[in-house]
Length: 373
Image (tube, rainbow, N blue to C red; front, side):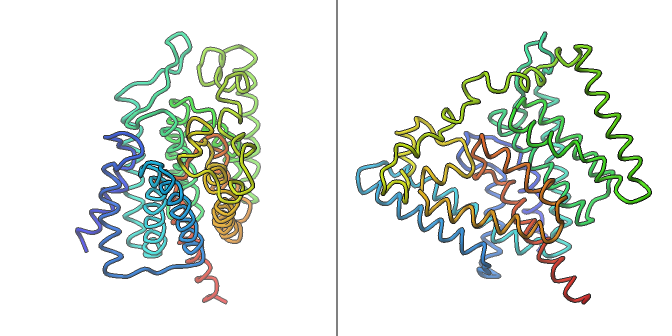
């Protein structure tokens, strides 16, 4: 058991370490799949409603890609199904193990270590926020800046989930949020900055909630708005590349949804509308994968595939809403889904850990409430 816990700790701690090309096996994946394999061997497959929707989606992908291969597509076209299988295993195993307080503490330790590795990687490899210095996009220990940006978004959501569940203090929450903001800004990812920036404006009200502390939150919120206005009006923000990136949203080619691949569906036949183009077909039509977490399933696997995936996300949002209400939706669900409008985050391991953690925490709290009543 001690060795299994070590596998879990190392696997989560190594999440930011990308030693090989994107899309393939990384060090953290090796440790996590080894841990999951031992767990499934000893405990079996325990499935819930959400797991079944993912399993149906996996079946749709395999069947759709089998037709592509039958009509002479490369065997490589099965890669999305392989990725989803890995994510399904991670979700199924972690959704169950995170119900254990001991395992959850190991996860928290690994998560904090992973944040430290990500921050150290950016500091060590280098970053530049000033326009005068070129304002290059940092990648840290990842392969590209968008991976760093998405990692920062998932840090934000997981940190709030753990705090809402009273597993980490407000002090650790603030430390994690500051780390998330630093990584986000260093990556210069517009999607990440928007995903974090919008809920970030209400963080002071969350931290200083309660009748006696609301005035402090209101004061700090006012000071934040005044500070932003001062820096903007004096031109100080103009010196920083992150502000330049945000200011120029809409003026660059990659800001266009058509460029992201959203227009692919308008080229679909009736059959393709229901079953999608498949991986090879999508690449042929768009020229690259669709840069959208949800829309990638519509383009690849049609209305059938996207309905299954959106239903799964609906179960996630509903659980968070029933457990943590508006704060949960805004701080946990909102950031990765907003990021997913412009990027495909469906294969990112920490996103599935966030999903598994959400289901586990919400289920535990529901059970605890039932016993109290």
